Image 1 (tube, rainbow, N blue to C red):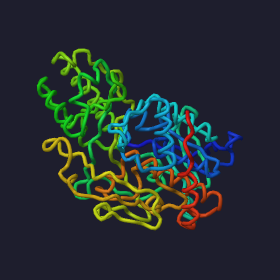
Image 2 (image 1 turned 180 degrees about the vertical axis):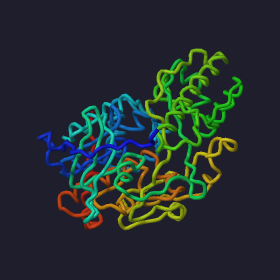
Image 3 (image 1 turned 120 degrees about the vertical axis):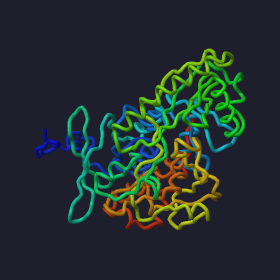
Image 4 (image 1 turned 60 degrees about the horizontal axis):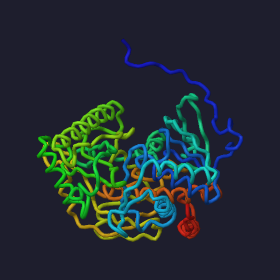
Length: 445
């Protein structure tokens, strides 16, 4: 039997042309996770006619589809990140771990609603349930001119003056022919995936030893509790995030050796992780109080992927920059989260890699790390920006992703408006436009 099937060439409908209100698109953002939503909002607020394309059925990516329920490195991120956390506060949908701290638990359903409201209020054209599958680059100019999607509508092409890849895995950039790095430089191994669950049937007052104070001690106590129940999680640092007093997000699994670029491996990891979550919950129930009524409300529709492609950009963020606290003239945000590599070895340490003990300082991420090196007219946002393995393990968290998206959206809008390439934009103009976004004051919900 042949191992291939020839697919005949065909003309594709131009999706923009079929929608009169969006026929002249300035910026297309692929992926509507934390980085993508921020990119689309920033582009629209900078005056660009913006389209946001998302594979799943809601906005928010790992915040919502992935049920992450936890924002890291958000406190020093002005603009859209601050607007989101402020509005969640106003709606009673966010709980700081430590008053004034940088990390927060939130209600993922409220996050879905808020992001949709913000995007629609900004006049952004949204297409859900739509997967980016191909791209067209002009061979003479190296410029990305179209992306191609598949959906219930069929196969469609989309065109814009500038594009942002906020897919997390760098799907658009890879389809366009950009070079990238993947995994550890010596082994190619990526950090494990984790499926998140929402659980109830327990109360914060009864499990305070497992949710309060520093993160390390509650994790250690929870791991010991699982062992007391006769089971050992594949993730040795399980954690419960309190969303409300009787409503928690739970992470307790590591899926090792699965590639985020292989649907079959993602499927296997998801099925295995979901089964483990239910086994872990059942084991805790056998201990009686306070776990006897613990139940899983839902597991995430998308397994949490910590690592995939790191697209080559005009600058590569390196571990040395984290260690030295790098400063850049074209800095678009300052990251404060340290190196956080989840162990890739299931037969060794099942929580964190010893490299995490490397001391780092707050460091700048420059705009150049968000500009694709191999294709023009394409910006990167979120964890697929240009960086090395260890740097990625810091900037990948979602407070940073939103800030990176905000900057990419501003630069994309300016490039579209002026007909320039992102790398040709005068930095003072980018900084001024970014300042305007950062200084917008949140409104009371």
